[in-house]
Length: 175
Image (cartoon, rainbow, N blue to C red; front, side, top):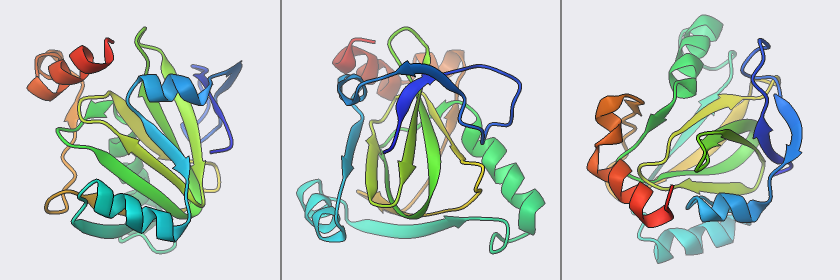
């Protein structure tokens, strides 16, 4: 992870850096329950065993190989960039390329974390977040799962505020 900072709201593309110039320390991510480390593939395997991740798949996001081409990729990025939670952890290990994960802090501000090759990011269930590519528009990632591979996003709403996973997250991390 090259940079962690507060997201600057402006009218540029979501794939632009949006760097406010206000750096955020990695400890702030940890206080939100976000795990980040730069790992070797061997350490990823150790972590998968330790945390009981039984399943995995791979995702590649780029216009050349994405089914349906660039317009389909842009539609998928719009889905990923819509603020949401999951009822399970989101685990990503970057194999190639780069992207941005944005997470909400305790004051509802976006923190942007740039991830690149070798970066492992684990988001806890219930944290509001979103993802996009950088302007290079390419990433290949390993996705790990405790159970069957799935990706179910619950977009932010009044209902997600009372979701049991969101409530548990808020209690555990005092946000």
